[in-house]
Length: 304
Image 1 (cartoon, helix red, strand yellow):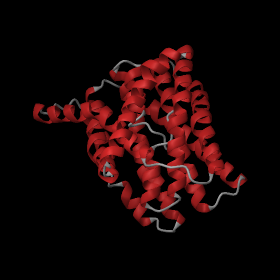
Image 2 (cartoon, rainbow, N blue to C red):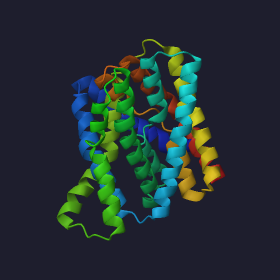
Image 3 (tube, rainbow, N blue to C red):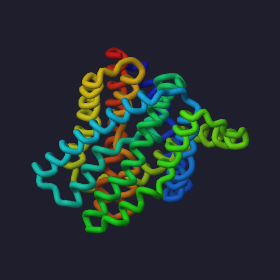
């Protein structure tokens, strides 16, 4: 377990730490950084990985079923806890988003890359999860926050503005149809994909650097338990239920252990729905994930 921590988690947090330091010195424009990641780097990375990796439709459907079951189970658990503790409508929306949306991109991708030592098959699984997460975050996530104030139309429209959706469709479509993408397109796509890990982790560090603890700490504690402990436990049960094993089982279990996505705090800030609560959940889950993700990686290696 110590080896896992040193070889996988420490490199990730070194880059996050660099992002923290650089933001303290230069005061990055986080809005611009987030947009560069969401609308440029992530779509390019997703397209290239889905286009280049040899995977079957059965793999895609297996990951899809896993993801749907996990999200539905987590949703009902978070909804039940929200009612049990009588959270307000605004707190309930932010709390639920913090459980459903985990950092599969600028945390999950580097961890996958280090755990599986650049295995393209394992990365394709993570990329599919990343795509589903982005689509869910910027569709249902925004929809849930907008419904707090009763505006549903803008949430639906926002879903079709996400480039990751089209990057996924093009990547999978070109792959399955054996379309030859010209070299002058693949070269810049490779440059974009190569920038993904470093830029994503530095961005995460810059985002974490501005987060602060303020209030509603009891909600934060409950969110941590559900996201970092219950999430992987439920994922493990689903993996056994679906009969998955080997690399796909490992990759899915590890992906489920990621901390709350920074995007959940970004959309909470943008739509002014408990932004302080969302920010402190992201900060706390990112810090404590150093321990929980290490444990999950070690367990996944023992089991699969």
